[in-house]
View 1: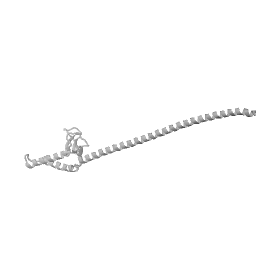
View 2 (view 1 turned 90 degrees about the vertical axis):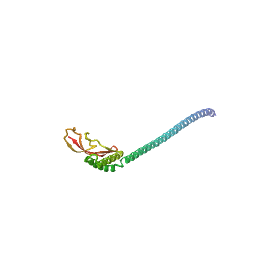
View 3 (view 1 turned 135 degrees about the vertical axis):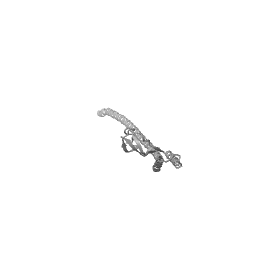
View 4 (view 1 turned 180 degrees about the vertical axis):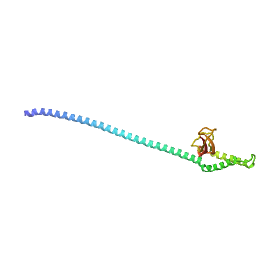
Length: 195
């Protein structure tokens, strides 16, 4: 019986130790659950933050695509307007080029006209001036060449000659006039150039 009596206090001590261990385990479990809850909250917060970042990046990408599309559309409109204005500006190019031959013939005829005061030559002079005025309104402009520095973009050199009057590289004679149509070379000037 002594053993039992002695065992009871021992059992009480053991139970107390067990209870202490259970309390520690419970506290550790509660701490572990709190840590898990914190980790879960942090993970959820991180996921939400990443989701927001992805959504923001997608919205920015859509905005950039929209801006690029608008810029492309504006460039397209400008290009179409330029092409349209070019079409209007150079629509008459073919007919004006053919009329240049008529002007050349007028100039040749007027250069060899007879007496001053002749009704026919006065009439031709008036028609020539009227035709040139109409073509100038359409954007035709004569290329100045005589005495100018030879420019292969504007002049077509047919021959070279020695000249005392002009420096080397200067145009000495215009054989056929050249013209611009709306600042574009329509026909090069045919020239002689000093050596």
